[in-house]
Length: 117
Length: 113
Image (cartoon, rainbow over all chains, first blue to last red; front, top):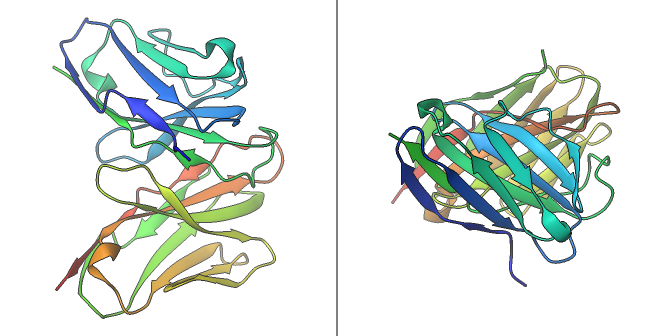
């Protein structure tokens, strides 16, 4: 069974450009999460989808970030326009079960390394 | 503020040796704590989950302990192998309210032959 996949694995863009990251969760997982790790810091939560609905987007840094999950399958995270501080590794994770249960194991993708020059 | 602190930041050991990684947290009220292993270029993979009532849990050569009173956890690796070289991340979740996990910065372990 395929795990969580993310595309691209790396992206290098210039400040002011737009980048779209994609995440394909494990088939059947209703919950999809986006996280970000800035260099030298811990992984931090960005937002959580339950199927196609945003359950919690309290971690989104600002309105330059837009996440979508049309049809409740794959998700995209768009950064427009990108700034230098957006550089980092963006992880996607998915899990089964009700999103509010803290015990559900989240399965992580390999991440997308974003570099903004 | 809910925090998770890990130590040491990095560790180098010889193959076959044991090591112990530490995790202190202030997340409250406590629900559970997971230890993840993250290989270079990969996403974190769960090794074990500890709940409030559990003191120790093993997964092969990995043994996690939890002291909920002192809010400390440890991950002990026995007879280390080269493949144990990775980052080990402690993640704590609250009970009730927000289920958003709090991550530690991780301990980078390098096992030398």
